[in-house]
Amino acid sequence: MIPKVAVVVFPGTNSETETVRICRDVGLDAQALHWTHASRIPEFDAYVLPGGFAYEDRIRAGAVPAHDPLMDYVIDAAERGKLILGICNGAQILLEAGLVPGTGAVRRPTAAFTYNGPVPHFVCRHVYLKLAVDPQRSPITAALPADALFPAWAAHGQGRLAASDEHLREIEQGAHLAFVYAHADGRVDDAAVPNASALRCAGLVNRQGNVLAIMPHPERDAWNYNHPDRRESEDMLAPSGGVRIFAAFAKALFST
Amino acid sequence: MTMRCVAIRLKIPDNQAYTALTTLQRLNLEVARVDRAEIWVLNDAGEAADFLARVERNETLFNPNKHVLHVLEERVPREGEVWIEEMDQDDGDDLRRLGRPVAGVIGGKRYIGWRLFDDGGAAPRTTVMQAVEQLLCNPAIERAIIR
Image (cartoon, rainbow over all chains, first blue to last red; front, side, top):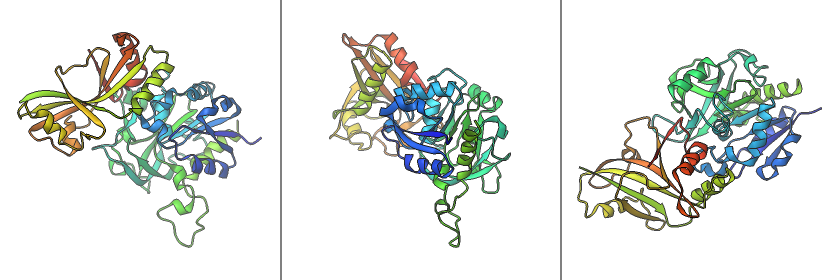
């Protein structure tokens, strides 16, 4: 049985096409599911919240979609252990919904991906993400090797993790810091961080490990033609490094 | 130096306020109308008489085709209103960060003012508090100021 994945589309979402495509490329039965079809949510085995500007980022990025009736179903699915992956704006929605880091109540966020620092600016930059937890911490990362490194594109104005000192400590001590920014050789330092994100955070996971929020876009470095270091001799349509996180996501779904 | 306070509102339909209204109603809050304004508390070294005109000349802050601007007598939220303040990464001078000075103004702090109304007028404080907790403020990055 091929797992069914809903790529959730709110008004203003803009990355659903490439997200559906990469999910299908790794063998999943993925389809875009619009917010007006929330009642179909239970049909799916897992959910991906893709990037964009859901509800035009009104009030705050992720705040309004976090209260959309469709998210009632997603929150319920998360509580029942289904796998949920949020990318960029999808990650912001998961934080506003309180699903990640999940250290507070539902829809009572304890952290945010907010305006980039040190001064607010939009960043469009090729980056690398490094796995910062034991791969077994989350079913979604379980198929990745320790210290896995993969490429992605950071494309956001609000991707800086911010939280109180107390909540940042909870994130560190609870092993919620799933991914950090890194250089191509795997080194981790502040120069690799495009947005002054606290803890050099590029991704967060919830306590149970079934909800993962990633700020940069691995689906935009999923084929060679997306990758800045591609060689002309390479097959432009062959998978690139960003595909690995989706392959791991698929492996987790096939094994459940 | 005098602290002066202005509210800049859209005079065209405010889709963001409308979205806030429909979301708050979905959360079962008794709200019939939401007004949104940019609130600027400015540290002014100029004359009071031409203060409004000086602010209006800053095209980044004020667009006469879509904004209305008025001076607030008090530098605190009105009844039914909350001011949302972003917790800054730097010195808190939002006007400097805007990159376009206002003549005579040394610096300024920006808030987003949300004013809630029910059928009887300004919404009670309890409703405003609920709106803050459930939607209007993420305490990880924002602070809410209520009268």
